[in-house]
Image (cartoon, rainbow, N blue to C red; front, side, top):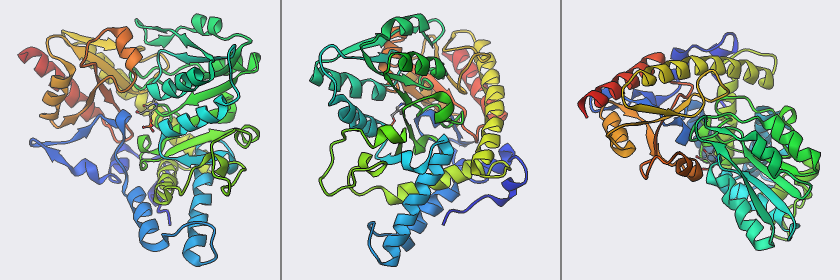
Length: 417
Ligand SMILES: Cc1ncc(COP(=O)(O)O)c(C=O)c1O
């Protein structure tokens, strides 16, 4: 069902080879080829993913657990999806649950975990996080009378204040919710430090890996997280969310559920009929990434592929950062390129708000988002005003030429303001 890029199985795919998989890259706008810098909001999708989605809907569509072929095929597609995402996260298939998106899954998990919390219990969140890793926890804490502690970010560097994190974790902490990477600034957080601090007091460690997963290969075992969410539409897949839960924990969460529905992991975490075509597409997205490099098995191919994407990401982010830094009036936010970060750069340009800047860049065929990206507290702390930041993210199909086009366009806009 899932197609693969065979050329990639013997050597690391070049940027040009990668790009041939994405029909969207043929788009032109205002006389220019479109360069998509909006990956942090959602990446473009390779043909293999759309083929897997339509193959499911056209040839295997059914509900689960019945005796006839299309139902059995649907069961097999879901099983294959759990196996693919387990490889992607270094988990086991029974630790992988699917859902609408990260936000919905996190609200669901928070409700299940929070039922056991009460006054005196504490939950630790951070200022650097997307609000999908804030509201689920503040909401359930308010309902249960638990206390929320918020770890500060350092506006000058875009990093977490780890001294403040250490102060926030106490024997009363029930859960630490931390982002793996900031979708607003690209900052990669020290997750192992978070895991160690949380586990030292017997707290659970939840990780939002939505912005991290497209750029760095997640390893739930190595990171030491108990729960983790990511979203396939940020790593070349369809709009579907993934929840990892350590197996002994996932099955024990008091999720709201229907009496006849399974009460064991991972299905216990899933509500109602799943997005079967989305699961098929998510599998294809994992296979697409794995097939960009050779290796003995899918996890090994993912490791090689992400090592290559990581190296290219550093080159591109360095080029982008240095190019933008040389332009009068550009103010860059977040960690410098030599620090742990994703290839996502956010900035403002004096004299033009980020909405108008985004519009002007689109006239050059450069699609880049602006605003608060729901990382609202980050934007408030940076005090950059209602139009927020202009965010340019380098996905696997980004090239040095496209980055140069972006730098040149910002320079031109800065000169003409
Ligand atoms: C870091 C981060 N966390 C969470 C989310 C929310 O993900 P979803 O759209 O799957 O609910 C996003 C989406 O932009 C994100 O970037």
